[in-house]
Image 1 (cartoon, rainbow, N blue to C red):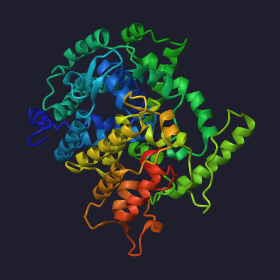
Image 2: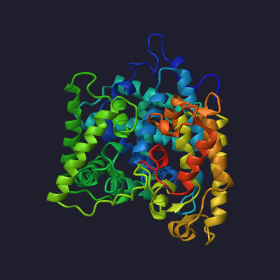
Image 3: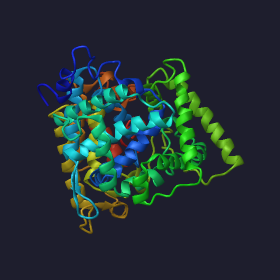
Length: 494
């Protein structure tokens, strides 16, 4: 996208005395650190997933089931950029999102085509965010006044304009918006597979974030309590016509529970300013103890205490067998072999559907591109390398010709994946990481990719991480199924 964006045109159309839509005091920025957003975003995501086009795209392409925390972090970063006061940052992020969505199209289980660039569908996604923000204020006893609601609606139309070049797919007036919203809910939403997964599977099987990794019993105990509550609150908050058409069950007292949840989170307005910061919370949840972030030492100590609490809880109230630790390597380092099944599930099957196909490798390319903040043409070069690797894998492993690789097909072949296409992936990834073209990855470049401190044991005699060492380590991780402290978080972390 070049030139003046839709968001900029929306800004200039406002009266001279009005502040820009994406200023630091915008309504979006006011809500960004509000804990009520957690409930509102879950609700909005269900309404998005209930749209047949969005639901099909999520089922086929999204990593929200297998890697929900990674998806949350990336969505958070994207929203921050799209509502940035800096027009250049908004334009760059809009271009990135359009490239990402342009790669997502196909057919759903009923043979209906979907396209993530479909303009009415993109408008619906933006509509759910606005409507859920209004609803969260109403349910928490702080309904928006008309002026504030109109201001926020203009901001979300500006968001859509930044993506599509204009906001014509959403009504210009907020009064007309409610008729539009009711029409879509009544006539277009369905009880899609993606919506059912979010409501009834995601929270029941939600993997622990990196902060709580290593305390499976403690996490399972909290999830067993919180999961059903979050599901019940979300169902109760959905529009009644959709609940009726989708046949969603509502537990007794769910409306009171939902009202109480929104009211309780709304009490956060009484906390001192700055106590709640969404960016810090998400960063902390995603923080690895191996990171050179100053908070890592505190996180490591917290994880140690959580493991002890988890062990005590397991003794008192066993919730099932905890995952067995992988065998230690002979050297006694953090690296060790893992089974083909574990490698398939944690690394290759990015979408969590039990199969390996192109959306899984596209998700790998998407995550690496996001970490490195790639623009064109580097982003396309990385996608093309992964596409070539997928063709190589499909030719070698798809024995039944169904266009995808099952876990059984993968395990039966016991393949060595270090073919020419995977080597090319490693080389392209190295070039994308080596921003200054020096032929070696320095500490800053290393941190951008791995989000951890530079591992000196990976450096060569010159103290740098060279191409041959990088390619060798990447191939060892991807083909030998060897766990690796720096490489695992690239593709295996939740």
